[in-house]
Image (cartoon, rainbow, N blue to C red; front, side):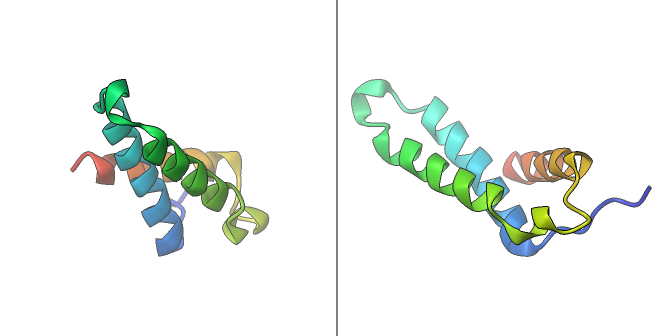
Length: 76
């Protein structure tokens, strides 16, 4: 099976989600984490509502492939 091709805005959003999550994890609670949490919610809504998921390509396997791709990009 070929690897799915994702829209660039979807990949960017998922990559930003991982980067923001990492920032939140490394921010002490006493330094205000609300902005990071709001950003995660915003990105989560964008990713979940993206039109790509309503296409025939928007399978559960594609969701996992997107997460794997974005995780690699966020950590590089």
